Length: 327
Image (cartoon, rainbow, N blue to C red; front, side, top):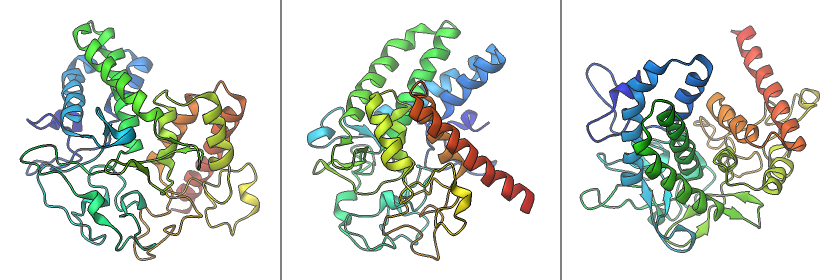
């Protein structure tokens, strides 16, 4: 499907049809999904069909989507989002705004609000988000992104497993080396004050104050300690003020995040703001649930995390079934 629409530059677009191809890529879940399919059904042909495209995409991310700065963001930096072809705007209402999530899949998430922005995402110090000139270097957002970096690691390690399965071991050393470097970087993104993994502004080395479920993604990248996993579950996932996963969620139908796992912590000023555009500013999403489940599943040998994984699955399954029955 979409992997076969890979551009000549090496990236997999977030959409393609007979007349056009997107100028932006997509979160890198291809390797993980293909590995899951291969492990379940054992079809070698689809691995051989897609493997080179996935390798090219991983290479493209390494070359075109790393952001380097000071402190924890020193070389090799982190993986982030970007757009090599279109002008960017810091206007939340424009479709092409680049601190609006472009190729992240998280359109207009508060993750991309400029520091000091109002709850509706307007204003703030947008100078920290200035893109590099695409004519001289990758056109990337100046933010070390926990989603992009964690998915890069998971994707690279999944491609390694696929390559070994079809005897394409020549690509293994470089993909393993890059994944290892990004794991070292992700470990630096743990903030002791909030007891969470957080995005970082490369220009200053400061942590972002936006807490979204992408903070859990380093868990599936294999960088969190057992204690960090337990702490994130206890302090954030099961926190009724933040991500609202609970065994007895149905007893409080008036809860502002009744279904759990809102796309920004429920106690954030930007939660459900602005009301005219709450798409990724508080609503709960299936793909984000899936990736958070991956994060918990990676630490499911820990009883507290295993229980949280079950609660997440139950609450979100109830949400899905309620929508199915209603519509």
